[in-house]
Length: 124
Image (cartoon, rainbow, N blue to C red; front, top):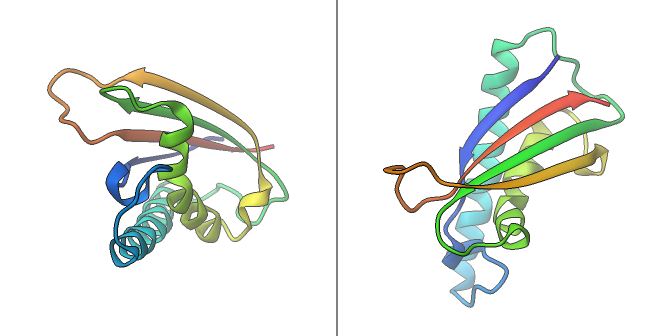
C-alpha cells in the first residue's frame, strides 16, 4: 500500500542551504513546512485509511520537479521540515524513513517557478 503526498517546496531564499535571509523568515518558513507536511499527510491518511501508522520503517520515494539549476541536495534541504511534518503525522520520527530514493525531473511547462515534490511512502 502506498501513501502519496504532493507539496510545493518553500522558496530557496527562505530555506535553501545557501540562504542568508532573516532568521524570522526562516523560522516562519520552517513552521509553514512542518504544518504543510503534517496536514497534507493527514489528508492522504484520510484517503488511505488502512495505511499503517507508527511503523518502525518507511520507504520513501521523493521526486522533485524543479526548473532552473536547483540541485538535489538543495531541494532536499528545502523539503526537510515538510518531511518532519510527515513523520509527525505518521506517528514516528524521521529516523524511520529509509531507504529513501530521490529523483529530480524538469518541471512541466507552464507550472511556474515554484518547485514541487511528490513523496510516495510505503511501510518497509
